[in-house]
Amino acid sequence: GGGSSGGRARALEIMAANPGKFDAEHILVVCRLHHFPDGALVLYEQAGLYREVVQHYMTENDPTSVVASCRRFGDRDPNLWLTALNWMASRDQIPIDDVGEVLKEVEEKDLVPPLMVIQILSQNPGAHLSLIKGFVTSALQRDKASIDKDSALIAQYQEETERMRGEVEALRSEGRIFQSRNCSACQQPLDLPSVHFMCSRDGQPCVFHKRCLGDSEHECPLCGEEHQRAINMRSSQHLVERSAVHESFFRQLNASEGRGFETIAEYFGRGLFT
Picture 1 (cartoon, rainbow, N blue to C red):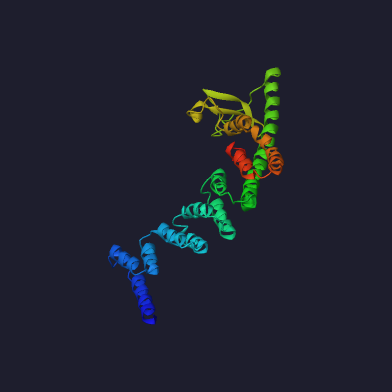
Picture 2: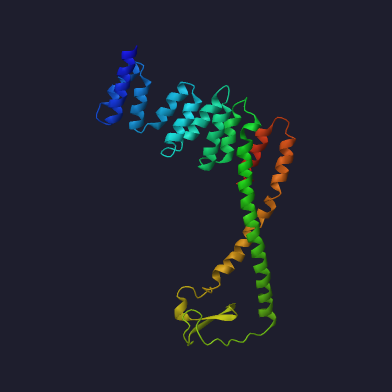
């Protein structure tokens, strides 16, 4: 009745104003015996048992409150979003609007690989491809942006490599006169022993006092990073080929005839979008 409602409201005020001053386990038992879930939720929150809060709303089949709890406590326990996703995927009918927000948070927080998200949702026979359309599209866009960036770097590496090849050919076929008088590191006059490299900086050959090189006498300290980039280019060449994967993916997806989840899982599983 009204008195009971007023008493419970007062109990909530006392519990909220005095965290840690009561025997939480005892009060939790009392809350359960008297069917007082609001009191139990206050205790869960005070104890940092955020998963129990989410689990309560799952038991109540309340996806909106599940998402609200994840939103409230997700910064402290990001895995709550995964708990919510697994629960929604296990339901007979997936709450479209709520699972959309869950997917957005899972993606932004990068909680699990896209393949795992697809596998979770594909366990529900009622899950439609439209459910993860935005999620997959976003993953592809991120991958394409990464490919475009890598392609630009590769083009730069190729240009630098051609220039270096020209320099190597010149070293093979032409004589080289060393006229540098100052160390490229300390700018002081050269004395022996000195180390001359076949590269140059700002039109001047790279030459150093041996003492200025320290442990780097086998690599020019000024040009070494640039040379390493050219070496890395070789291992990056395959990234250009990945730009054609997206077109192939959509062709296969359009022809999948109801096997969209399997097609997406296959591509992610082969590491083509990571």
